[in-house]
Image (tube, rainbow, N blue to C red; front, side, top):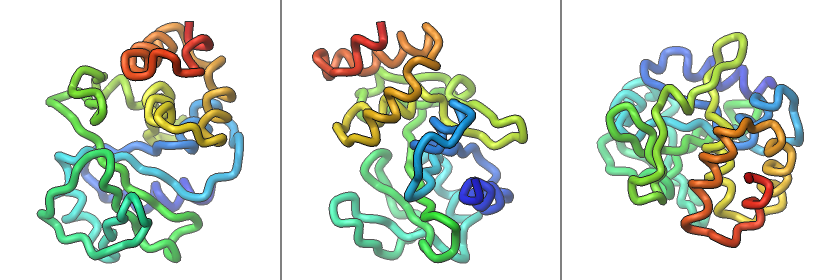
Length: 191
């Protein structure tokens, strides 16, 4: 939890929305640390990149190549794409590496960048809060991202959390996965 405290302190002056994402968000939802984590994913809206750049000047995050993991300087104003483009803070500054994932949005809706604009949810509905006010991403959104991969940790995350999802969250996740992956192995658990 030290890593999450560091992220909270890092984002203390950030004026826009942000969410703890990835495996840590699922841990917050499950109210327990389910497995070790190598980093902390933080979701921010791509439309807020100017505010992000104004807030995080020293150190300035770098742009991480999604294929190689190589970092290069990020220049504010540079066009970044939700999904493949990831910003990262220097790893040695925090208890765990902090990765910034960019999200697409449309007015008050989060929009899944792979869903051609059809998979969306109101920003207020994707936002959950810890008792002390740390925002984290709703589990169905995290699992939708994780459903694209067959990494063992993603399957483990789904297995650990699926039973905790209420009927609405299960139905939404199923509707997000099924059109693109009608034979996805997670679908039977979402009925």
